Length: 569
Image (cartoon, rainbow, N blue to C red):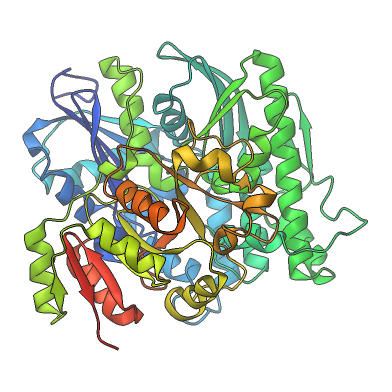
């Protein structure tokens, strides 16, 4: 079958094989499956062809049902990684600092940065198509059409086609993909109107990656730590890093790019405490992105905005953009980083080839589920004592009310980087001692990283200033906590008085049942919610993963499916 042939029946498969690789499936105009490879290999933010995720995806449909495959990103760097997967695996270990720093670290990092500047061409597209065709045949997916979707088109599709806003101004910003660092356009009635492309030489995302590296953190992974640290900076009279980016209309122009930018930041970092350097970087990104957004709204007169791309994992930036006078609504795609590219590729292919305009997205229903049988088998295998209470949600609420920390695992696995009440660790939101215990004993995280709340959506106005419940339910935006609510949210309130909330709707059982019971017991339907995983690992996926993490974590209570596990102390 030629590559431009298409049959409107059947499923559309999206594949991303770079950083945080994954698979997505669209069938009957809905997202049937979406998951990332890391959950199966247990290697956080895994890279390479997502074989395990694809195998899981094909349990939801037959290989013969797949009529179109959409692939993201065919630039020179990604194509070389496809041809030589060992090089991608090696760089993955370097980036995640698994092992000693190699002598060639700076050279390899610089080379990687240079290669990402080369855009796709006819050779890279042909090579990528051949590599993917060979891999797909191993799974019984024959000569179906393969379409290649540009990196930022994938990001834009995730933002525009999963939100309820139309027409909508769409902005994407990240490090680099297909030699592009961002785009601006308008999406209306299933059609794109591109307005601007931001080159990788002026990348706000790469700027933030450099800052992360200079603070001795892992790029593409620890940028959230930089954002959290920035809140601890004391006020300063000067404005370090100001002027590194100039915004003119829809253009971003960087004073330095590539390794010159890194050297400049290294000189600035030399004379600044870590907190002030992080704060300066955060302010630089906020000013530049806000100026670009203001100009884009003025150009298009479209005050409803949807965003995606790794830079928008920065929830403080998102809060600032939402508060702009020119912005009426802001939607942040919940899997905004490269891990969402597989879904973006599938969505754009469905739009172009099947006429799909948008989809309803519930990211807590896109992964594999846990059965009671699987849970019981894993518990018996690990020799863990368990019982089956009448209401696991009520049991968990009672434990949390009594200041216990509870691992909570059941239902479908969440899609994306956040634990949203299906693979979570829960505790009281008003007890800062539990926060400290979680950070030091269980999660082993940096002390300055805040935890997040899951709260009843109907209670949000009681706790937060102008909560954006409708468009950002899934921990994608920071919100200011009301002064009168800070004591009851002390364990989930950052030093600057903000939190990153998850709004739980009435149909989100069983978590909503837990919160309702907790409200009856302690007067507030809010819990501290952090991901259920061991340090350095992704979220647990299976009951086996959950039992292993539970045993190694030292936690005393776990709700696994319908069962309550209490380990004797």
